[in-house]
Amino acid sequence: MPDRPPTPVDRSLPTAEARHLMTLVRAIARREIVPSAAEEEEAGRFPRELFTLLSASGLLGLPYDSAYGGGDQPYEVYLQVLEELAAARLTVGLGVSVHTLAVHALAAHGTREQRAAHLPAMLGGGLLGAYCLSEPSAGSDAAALRTRAVREGDHWVITGTKAWTTHGGIADFYTVMARTGGAGPAGITAFLVPGDAEGLSAAPPERKMGLKGSPTAQIHFDGVRIPDARRIGDEGQGFAIALAALDSGRLGIAACAVGVAQAALDEAVAWARRRRQFGRPIADFQGLRFLLADMATRIEAGRALYLAAARLRDAGRAFAPQAAMAKLHCTDAAMRVTTDAVQVLGGYGYSADFPVERYLREAKALQIVEGTNQIQRMVIARHLLGPQTR
Image 1 (cartoon, rainbow, N blue to C red):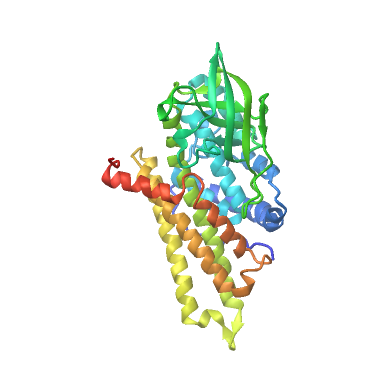
Image 2: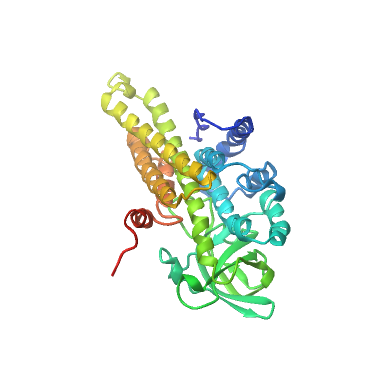
């Protein structure tokens, strides 16, 4: 059964421009994403041509400076766009979020010359980005990364392997964190590496339980040589740059999670209205009505939480703990809502002929990416109590 178009959410948007933008996003979702979402996910196809369309439509640079081709949109608006895209197909919403994450280092910490040279193509020129922090032996403990960059005159030579890279093997550029100094966070530097760099290669994509259309792969750097002009920020600043990007990226994951949960709720409500048992629609049964009410409440709470964090960010205030709370709550809520949606549909929910089983498999990934939910709890607790002592 094909996916249903996302049910329009009654949104409070700050400007007429934002309302027009949402109309555009919904039209693209309805015409270009939803009709082929189930088929393409099942086949494991990444919709690169769709990302070209999104780029040309200005949707790959929404929160960035219009002087470089961005959309000048606040995170409050950008995240609601992500939610709409993820409700249509998570591969698309997550892809836009990851691309935005990959651009963040250059947009926030690059020199004026670097931004002028690279941002226009990233934001509206059809390029697609990837973010390389995790490694096979450095996941949650990202500061233990081993990929090394050694300076040779005006160039750097990068050697090592990155893991779990969304868009790995198809990205046009990679924001890469590599060790240039000693152990720990202070020895890490950020680099912008072109996707066609000599010595850069991708392993076969991981075989995942969900998000099959979104390629995730290890990236190998075999003596990749890049000029110092592609170093982002100062030497040793890379880990701080990475964490700053992740604070914003976690809000993107939260918005995507709410989108998936909303799609699952829409399916469950539609099913409850048309499915009849014991001579009447199952929507008449109080137990199921309460289940749907709880699902809707979790979604609304998640949406309010990520928007509150976004407004802090837009106001220039600290928002890291709120971003962690949003990522934690929204992805846990998506897991619960999608599980309940499968239950509402019963045996049909467990069938691949209906989309809710796919939503459940996709929701699980969101509890893991860009910092597991256990890491989010550590971030929140550190904010409340300070660092642990030994």
